[in-house]
Length: 250
Image (cartoon, rainbow, N blue to C red; front, side):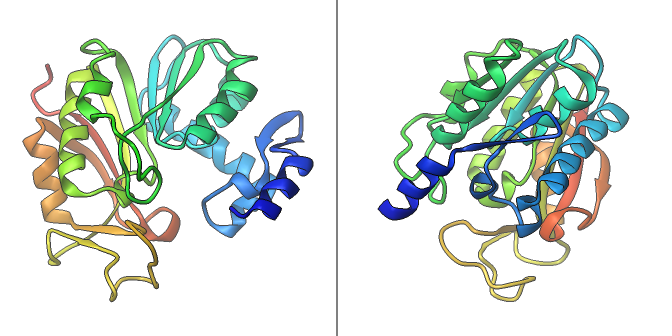
């Protein structure tokens, strides 16, 4: 962001109130253009909260890990729909997003915590120096009932996906669930960064990391997890949904 844009946004502010809910300012919403609309953003947040309740076992008192929490879309939806009587941990490589969530969410809802994940990502955190595995050691085994990632594996390569999945298996409680989205197709190479023949033009580092469905299933199985549900290209920009549980029930 240039200096003039930074000054403009500083004066304009970084939050808006809509229907009594504090939302990140429009320029902070990195999804599609439709997310600039306050009603669309809030409804999408509540829709994700409903997904957790209807498909992932969300209930009062459970613990949620939101990986790639951004500016708090899922947290905002959960609080709006179900209040805050559970533990919510959001992590992201974008420090600015974590600062926003801490200021506008944690200050009013102490059971919601946010932490900067200083792992290197060529697109979102190129100077990161932290190890994913070292970061997750702060969490004990079976710490979370739900682990949620929206549009995270779409921007990371297979070595990191494998580490995340292995850590998730350790962190899940008995009966816990993982939700993630990914770009997948059948009968394509295992992984391609910014494929030229896929959906639209991709620009910049890790804009789109596409996997073959078969290879993603192999990574999931290798981590001791099982796919409980799969929805092909049902999400933004044609992302597919994977819902996972521990394959052996332990």
